[in-house]
Amino acid sequence: MMLLLLLALQVSSALAASDSPICSLADVIFVVDESGSVGYRNFRLQLDFIKDMVSSFIIGPDNTQVSVVTFNAMPYNEFFLNEYDNTDDILGAIDTIRYSWGGTAIHEGLDFVLLNTLLPENGARPDVPKVVVVFTDGYSDFDAANAAAIGLRSLGVIVIAVGVGSKVKIDLLNVIATDPDTKHVFLVGGYNLLTTIQDKVTHTACSRCTKYGSHWKESPVTNSCYRFANKELDCERSRDWCLHKSTEIDVPAPYPMLVRIETQAENDWIHDMIQSSKGNRWIGATTIIEESGNLTTLWDDCPLDYVHWTNWAPNEPSVFHDGEREECVYIIRKKKYLGKWNDAPKHNTLKFVCEIPLCAEADCYGTDTIKTRLPMVDACLVEDFNGSCDWGWNVKYFLGAEPNQMTCDEPCSGRFRMYM
Image 1 (tube, helix red, strand yellow):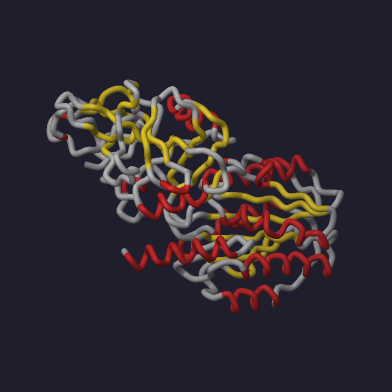
Image 2 (image 1 turned 180 degrees about the horizontal axis):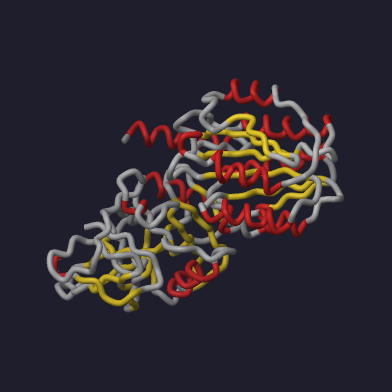
């Protein structure tokens, strides 16, 4: 565990020290136009662009894998994901790719990726982000390209479309690319200008969070995306904003909610991120006073889950201040207590941090994620409640009750990640 933490911190330091994005875990497939309109010199410029991107990846069977498919009127596999396991071999293989002119059939290249490259026997790995970067300078069969791209996106593949020159059709790029188009479609006037979008394309390919919008950031120490909202709202309205307004696309469960900070490493990363901004920020915790009189801190994302790790400032939480109930929790930006937590009345207005876990429903409860969660139960239980409910169900919490006296209650709009 300590080794993993040190590795995460090293990756974090590398990210902070360099302007170049880094892909540490992904299956990245480049689909390259070699139609007659491209020409040999411009074809080589595409390959140089790809080589520069690959050079910023951490390559390996347990890190990022790369495949290249070329197309004109037909697709050609240059190499599959599992053919090369180091950067030098991939760069050498790219140098050997030959240019063959022909027509422009983007759907042929995308269909080949769908039906061949993404097969497990060709190196595609389950539960690893998959990214397709497609280049073109011309028009292709609109409906066929749309159908092929829909097939890829239905598997969760992020599709990035790079259009070059004045003849490329923006409507074609938009139907190919993952939504929002503003984040996944890139257009340049010529192949010699590809270098001007190098970092932006690499960042989009490497970040699993940009699909939610440009403001979302991926942390090197957790398996989540974060948005540091700069508007000031009370804690209840900030929860609603995270859930309904923080993303540019509809997000399936687990839904965006106020952040739940569960480790020192996560807390340190968040306070590092807020140092350059003004003001404290709400997090997704609340304090309650049980019938027994004991004070309990709960994560409120659907809505109740005990907070197991805390970082309170000295003499906090105070619960009451000047006779007013303080029930919402924020992380402090001021240097004296930077990163510590405090509580405040729910009507106070602050900036806040939203979070989306980077996992499918079942994966969120697996032991392979950084944040610890228990397996789901198949049904709502009245007796012997084990601390978990099916997705979309709330927990009916009886103050002072033992865990096995809880049960599942009404469906809720937020995500639920409970462990006891």
